[in-house]
Amino acid sequence: MRRTTAILLSTLLLWANLGPVWAQSAERPELEALVEKSYLELLELSPQLSFTEEEIRAFRKRLESEKRAEQKRLEREERQLRQAIKRARKQLAELNRRADRESEPVATERRQLHCRILKLERQWRLKRIERQQGVKVAFANKFAKLDLITQWPAKREEIERIIAEGRARERRHGDVEDIGIRLVGEGQEKDIKLGEEAIRRMKTYGLMPPEVEDEELTAYVRNLAEVIAANSDLRVPIRVTVLESDEINAFALPGGFLFVNTGLLQKVETESELAGVMAHEIAHAAARHGARMMKRATIANLIYQAAQIAALIFTGGVVGLGTYYALQYGFFGLGMVLQLALLGVSREFEAEADQLGVQYCWKAGYDPKGFITFFDKMASEKGYVRAVSFFRTHPPFYDRIVATFSEIMYLPPKPDLIVDSPRFHRAKRRLERVLREIKLKEREKPTLKRLPQCDEEETKQGESDREGRGSHRDHARPSLER
Image (cartoon, rainbow, N blue to C red; front, side, top):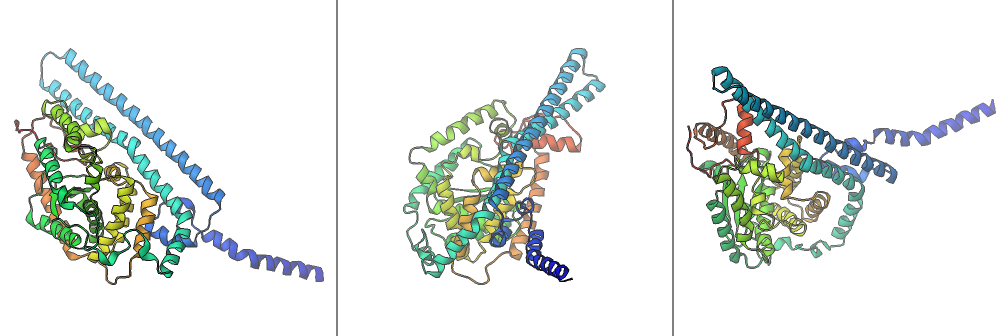
């Protein structure tokens, strides 16, 4: 009896000791679920998480395997699309051989083949972008979140210790109370001519997307930019242009020229997200990143390749800029034309723009976490393609997320930071009306390129093929056909 009682007591003690461990293990999220969470969630969760090195290593290996499998899948689908295009073109060639006259049945069959070829070619181009760029973005995002789970807790403790010791101002640009007075980017006024010349050349070659001519919408974007600029280290006037472009991005040229795409305005969900992206771009201009990278280059060098592209377009070599980008470089947007030098894009400068952008948002009264939420949204974009252009001009992941949130922690607390506002949502509603009006005008506008009259879905595919998703309209050529 005593022995039985002893065994029972030992068992109960064992359960008492193991119970909390097992419960904790059962409640602990799996790594697969964690890398799907937002950066802000993981930044809060990671100090309470605990994974062994073996678990992290095994999951990293699994991600690498999934990445290779995804690339192979896309390669296989690319081949299938190329074969389908080849078959359709072969059918078109056979039609031309057997029909010496364009009867109504032949014309119908030709139109159907034309529509099918346009649709297949667009699908093939987008598939190639997914494989070459999109998969890289998607998995870099997951690896960054895995690194955050393992490395952020120690980094957070270090930041808290520095703040507790009163050493927060010792970091670079730690003098946030002196924004607007401190010396950041001396000589900004010298950059104005540089920016003006770049804009002039791009317009000359027809490489600048059309401006949105709606005073209500542009006034909202301009006012927001001016509020941020007034709370920044920019010492030259901010000049803001809203561009009609599906590309989800914004960019600043030397001298305080800020360009905001309608694609970005559509994608942001709160005013703090828009403020975060704009503050980041204003930081590039304030710190003179573009001008500093131009020391060994000239605008003529940067625009030369764009001029070659323009020559191909004007002579009918390709349908439009967006199509050419996709065919030759696997991405859309002005990043190709501007190169990265004029935009001031490098790892060092991106890190500085992240830090300064967070400070400018904070100083202007906006929640600087908006940039992280937008960055996260773009990194998690399904279908890969839409995010490619943004991450070409905003590289890489883990370092900048940690650096950005570190800066947020260093900033003095400020109550009532703006996350959203009614005026932002009024501007969003106005944007949708403006874009609908533009779309109606585009349908009525004559074009140089002859496209077949496809059904509604095929027409949509054909128009996207002509314009290039994420690029601007083919507005540089004269209109010759109705």
